[in-house]
Length: 129
Image 1: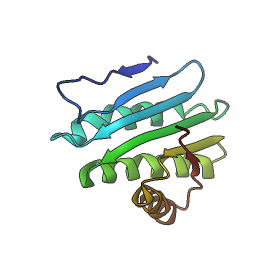
Image 2 (image 1 turned 30 degrees about the vertical axis):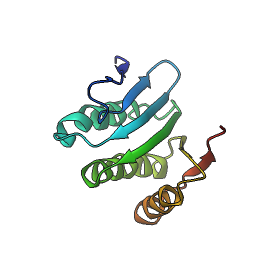
Image 3 (image 1 turned 90 degrees about the vertical axis):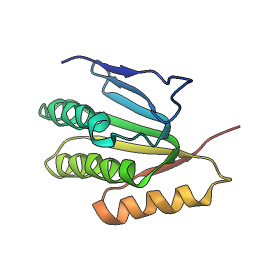
């Protein structure tokens, strides 16, 4: 299994930065997510998480540091959280942290919606300025 690293491209700010680290089980998605082909972008991430979680002995921490995401991204983030919730219910140790700007109350509402839809506990972590 390989790490997934996708760096933000200044000319295409609508793709988030991704760092999925197989060695330490920490995955991070940050920046903005509002690309045209959302499914094409997120599919490898979903598959990576599924494959990683096949080994029940390996913990996974997923950190979201998104400042904006569109509806299509939201659907695929929800798919990702559903995979993680199922895995947690099967005994995997998973932690989901969502870093947010206190000046953006809408993001807190979005995260609470994700929690309600998935039944997954998501840790809200305020970004320090």
